[in-house]
Amino acid sequence: YQYLSRYKQKENLDRFTFVPGRIEGTEKECLACLMEFCQRSNPSWTELSNFTRFLNFQLKKCEKSVFCSTVVGGEFSGF
Image (cartoon, rainbow, N blue to C red; front, side):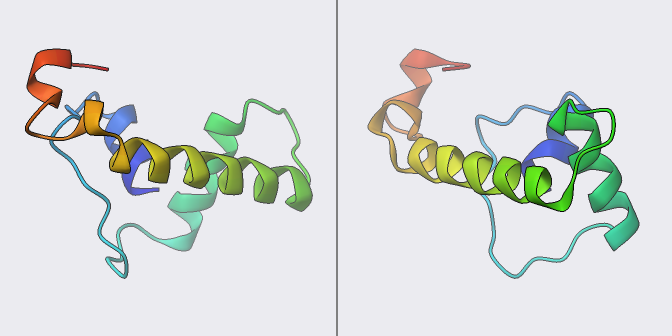
């Protein structure tokens, strides 16, 4: 939700890092955001779960990537 809400507001995600345990928004706002980005008209809980797990997996890989680090990432803005 931290990434998706910032992406929706067109914030620069290059300098943002997920902070575990940080609570942002309400449960209702989070669910609405997930449903919007899931791209399904009426997603099941399984579809939302699969979407969030896949997105979380990809974001963790991105955060650990040398190409997205603050040191090297400056050369690859928006990567």
